[in-house]
Every structure is written in structure tokens, then in C-alpha cells.
Length: 321
Image (cartoon, rainbow, N blue to C red; front, side, top):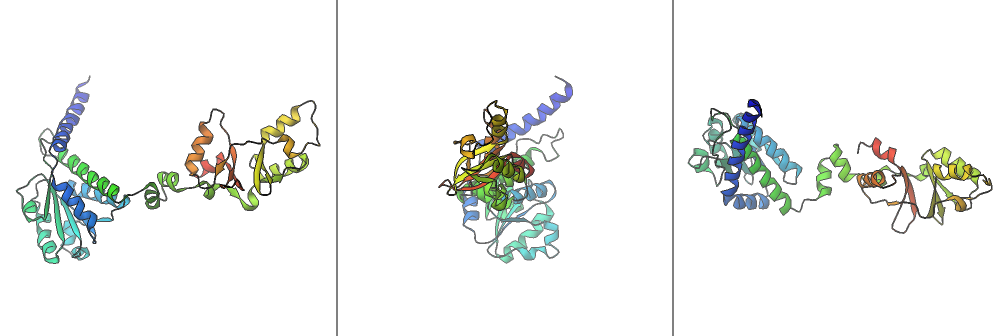
């Protein structure tokens, strides 16, 4: 192994040791802090400076996206009016390894006068920040991965892990579900995969391809051509009774005994693969692609087998799933 890779592994090893130590010596106050946040009627405000501020921003975003609304407040900005967002019912979660950063310490009197609760996440239990806090969450660090033991490395990793753990615990306490996550991530691919249902994508109304069981071969060709989806549903009293695809038509026409007087019920597949309108679009895409014999089109029905529309794999892919 090269000398460079050895240095990389050494840094990772140092951080892993600190993480393991933190895990083995988890502060019991985490339970108290999580319960206080869970029952709070106010806002959750995160703050920190430097690298700790960056971690606070990330944790704030994670909390907000998993059911616990949170906001980041920069300590310097708070001294110039932004402290006005802190309310009496709020909780301020301050992150700082040393707990002695001047910007954080200067914010404490304001928090106290307003009456908000102060929770600190720090490696220094004897710091000014810890002493002034209502709840202290100790995050001991064996050693920074920095060769000089100066640059925040292990300490910021542990702070991030601690914040993520708080967010995940609150997520479970609030019974936060996939549907909730999708609601907060509507634009991303993950949000689409969780939220988009087949009913939102399928071709319906005048765009769905359908014929009666007695439809002639000419009508079948006309409908499948006009709707341009590669298949047509065979329907009787609004219920799906079969499906005719481009392949079925080619198969029928390739036979030496081809009869142009064939009707839909003589050509159709009476047991087509189908999906229900409430199915998630991404689940349908996976099932269509991963079958032993993949399919490119399928009819959509409700629980009573009423034909509702048609879905094409191309429609699903165009949605960016």
C-alpha cells in the first residue's frame, strides 16, 4: 500500500476510534434533550461558528426534512438584530467543541433574557457554554485526525453524528413516514419515487386506449395507432377483460391462416399484467423492468377491476424516476 493511502487510513482510523469512544460513552442527557425538543411548542434554533456552524446548518436541514422544523442562526448576525427570531418557547441548540467561542458566549445573555432553553453540544463540560446551558450534551473527542491535533476533524464528525442521531430519534418519535418525507422533497428524484403514484402518470380520459370485446381488427388497429401507446385495453362494462399489444397484432398477422375478421376477444391476452391506480409509479417501473420478461406497457385498474388508464414505461422514465 502506498504511503499516501496509509495516511488516509490513519486519519479514518483516528476518527473511527473517537466515534467508537463517543458511542461507548453516550451522554444520558441525550434522552432528556430529545424529550424536551419533542414536547416543545416553540422553534428549534441551531447555532455555531466556524466548522461547528457548518455542522449546525447541516443538522438544521436534516431536522427540518425529517419532521422537526429547525432554523440556523449565526451568532454574529444575532448581535445585529437576528436574535429577534428567538422566542420564549424556543430551544437553542448551540454547537461548539471548546464551548468558549466569543460569538457563542455573547449570545447567551440574550437567550437567558428572552427565556428560551439552551442546549449545548460540546466536548468541554467545564466551558462557559456548558455551565450556562439548561442541558449539556457532552461529545468527548479522543484526538483530532489532524496531524497537529488542531483542525476540527474528529470533533466535527462526532457533532454531525450526534445531530443526526437526535434528528433520527425525533423522526421515529413523531412517526414520520415515507409520505411525509416525500412531501418535503417534491422536486428531487427521491421525492418523486416516494410520492408519485401511477394515477399521476398514466394516460387516462380521452388518452387511454380501449375497445370493446367485439371490436373488429380494423378498429383495433385504428385505436392502437391513434393512442400511440403500443397497446389497447379490451373492456366490457367498464371492466378490464384483456389487453392487445403491438406484439399480439404482429403475431396474428404473421400466421398463414390470418383472418382479417378476427375480433378483439379472439386476439387479446385475457390475463394481462396490470397495476392499481394507488401503486407508486417507481414501484411499477421496477416491476415492469425487472420481470423475467420485461413489459413496456400495462393497463391500470381500480380495486373493482374498472379500467382507468394505460401506463407506458416511457411515460415513467420521462418523469425522471
